[in-house]
Image (cartoon, helix red, strand yellow):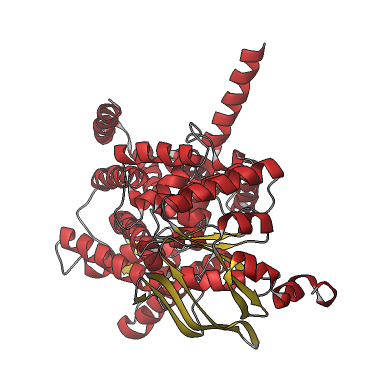
Length: 305
Length: 241
């Protein structure tokens, strides 16, 4: 039944470009893009509580792969190469960092983004002798929209599968107590690396698919660390341990950020920071969990009355 | 037949030698007490057996195969399960999921419908029947200990390491706890018990090993060991010996 509803919703969303104007379609693309990133982020970081700030490193790698290869390879092959690059980088980063925990992991992933950005910048400046790149692909906004919609559906399906499967339970056990996890026979590094890689490949694809929208790409645009922070806030707002939580967090926050950046371009990051703090303090488990506990409190009161 | 064998096992933390040349054997089906004052190296020894800490020197063998050098997940797959000195529940999981976590990742995983009935059986074995759906962090201390034991038993261990499992229980709970461990012993599980509750040690252990300052100072039948002058000195000080 739920599956049927999901498929109907997907089909309805697929028809959206035929009647929506360019501005709503642009907003939808933004929502889908962040929805994918937040869902992919929460797939790994939700249960393990490893706060990754490397989202934009993978997102940017995807975008850059398209920028570099789109004129030499057919588009589907470019996407495949982007996914492979994302996978290889995720495996290297994962093996190097997943033994770290807590704040060390957060800082490392933040540093990683900067490192990737600097490496790409260095390469562009010193080897190709140009900083920016143009992406000319015969893909309209509706094509990007459909691709992102498909990616979001796939991401939610994978997230759903993870939640039902042993690997999902393993991640939750690791998040609660890695010592217990290892004593129960869970292969910690392998489990974390698998989920981290899946999550990072999805982020890379999200960047690759959106690359044609910018037309002009340079490291400071596609490796903007704000993206990583936004994704964390979105997932936390919606609730990182629920299937639709990150997506539901992405919708209002993306719209809010759009409005803020249009109306308060100079104070945008201050407001963003305050919002981040507020969400962590007021809704540590996300709005969905807060809503549920409020509902539980109200129904209990009614039962007593 | 020997199940567990430690030979010259040593653990150093920098300049501190926590366990020094510890050797002993456990036969299959035995319940053995590992005693000693605080800081004598009992938990460190347990941590090396379960693979949580690597040995600095010496070897640990299980059923004839060397297990020292393996990680805790590999040792768990060979049939070693444990509880922890300070209870380690998985607080964001339900009671049932805590047990499922052990069933799902053992050598022959149990998952899905089959797991559900196993969880119920294991929980009723430890006196937590019908509590599977409850959040783990809502349990009382004794119930957390029961849950941790059910989790350890879920892996169907050949060797069970209990680290002060009876500590902090009131007299009634202690009685229930001793009965519970007795039932495990009667099922043929080999148990190594780190314990300070001497009534429990007398009731449960056929044999005891006593450690002091990282080394073994006595080993033998429980009654003899507890009457040993050196053991009493180590525990209670010179004037009582």
